Image 1 (cartoon, rainbow, N blue to C red):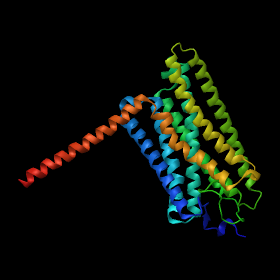
Image 2: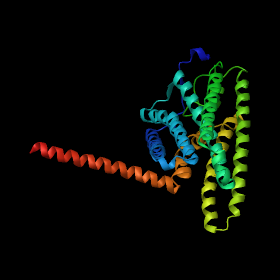
Image 3: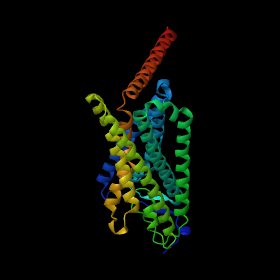
Image 4: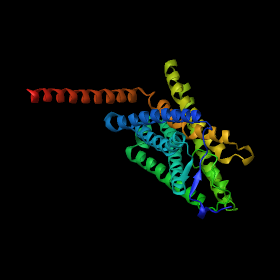
Length: 326
């Protein structure tokens, strides 16, 4: 038996028992993380450099891409390191930092998804009031509120979780530091305080989810009044994937955090954690951003422009080397 003051490190869940499967998991995580980093990096660069994309929708897409980059960089690199080097250790301070940043980016992402549903609602259902309701100052205030509330939410949960006395070892049944797994190590009824905070967070999440559903219901009602079948198809093909990703993210995260201990198992916990911590960061660029024609054109222009720039630099270097040789 030990308490939290004597714990110097935690043991994370090994993704596989054999070396071959560990390397397979490493390759899978590497592929997913590289795809997410490339896609989100291109979105951030395109929106930042393209002045014609400085609109509320693309501003929120840029913020969403930042949260996806942060979330995947918080959990996946450590899992890749453990799989590659056949280890499962993480220090106490690194575990606290990982939990904080994971909660921070996940909370910010959900807040931004809620704001983006409101943005889509106003643009489709109240287009004449779009400039008034979603001006540059209002967008900046909403984004700032999303990031600030995420910071306070993450700080509150991290401080409360790591203030609990831990006396049930240091083995976590997850490939990253997560609140439910740390609560299992607590030997005090003080963990009920954190469960209460999680319940409050779940309630606020459900309120936001109802708001998202309401927004999309209103959008669908407006879309059904569109006379053009092509317009209806385009709107539904855009909104339905949005709603599907939001539902996947919220339902899996809520179930993972609030399910009873009797339903917990390593395989179930691992599957749920991948669904809400890794999959959305890889899917969001495809669902929210790269299906947009304006953004795809901006990304293509950015990529071809950089290619021409490097090609021109290479040609100039070649010419200068030729003249210097002569």
